[in-house]
Image (cartoon, rainbow, N blue to C red):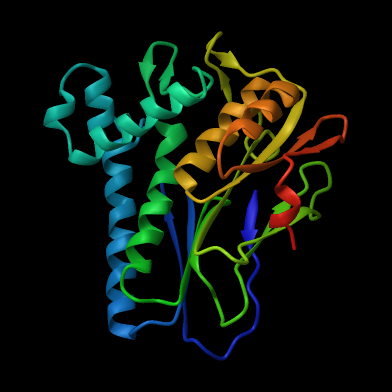
Amino acid sequence: MADAVAEPTETPATLRHAEEVMGTVFSFDVRGGEPGAVRGALDEAVAGLHRVDEVFSTYREDSQVSRLARGELTVAECAPEVAEVLELAAEAERVSEGWFSTTYRGWLDPTGIVKGWAAERAARAIAGVGVSGVSVNGGGDVQMFGTPERLRPWRVGVADPLRPGGLAAVVSAAGVDRLAVATSGTTERGAHIVDPRTGKSAVTDLVAVTVVAPRLTWADCWATAAFAMGSREGLAWLESLPDVEALLITAGDEVRCTGGLAARLG
């Protein structure tokens, strides 16, 4: 679980909003920009999240994804976002050599990519109206653009899975225009990550994997895939990905990091 670390500021203007959707809470922190344009972009982003929930929820029998899984719709008959997400998921499956999958026990389930993709899309839309910075936290996974204040970067605290209330690290977006932080683990939701090879809960030596990357869509996927792999294989694979850093914590309280992670801490 990751939480944006907010710091006191007078300028630029700040707009914050929390929205319950997709079974979690999406928190928005927007800095600067013309107030009317920012409010309009935020309202559209929130409406977009609810639309995503309607289209992609596997808990709704009438959602397009549920109907697609039952063979009642084709991809072409669904909203364009469905084809977009499924193409991204296919790329994630290819890059992870099958460790990330949208198939659960033979049933279509794109849940593992939708939340990160939706939060990134919402943040990007707000960033496009001329704000100085925006952070969108979707259930603990964060996409950031710009900066919250002049000469101050966004910072994200990564919760310590073995010490409730403690932080395992603080990630800084200093020096980059966009950054995302995503964590997969068993602390908040138990053993919910599936091993695609068995269709059962992944059994590994890990309790959490945090991935830092430019895009939340990929950070979320890579954290899930690496967790299913286990610490040794997962770390080696994450090291091979461009523009990706990671922090892995085992059940034995070992901390393993990619080589460039230190440059992102602070």
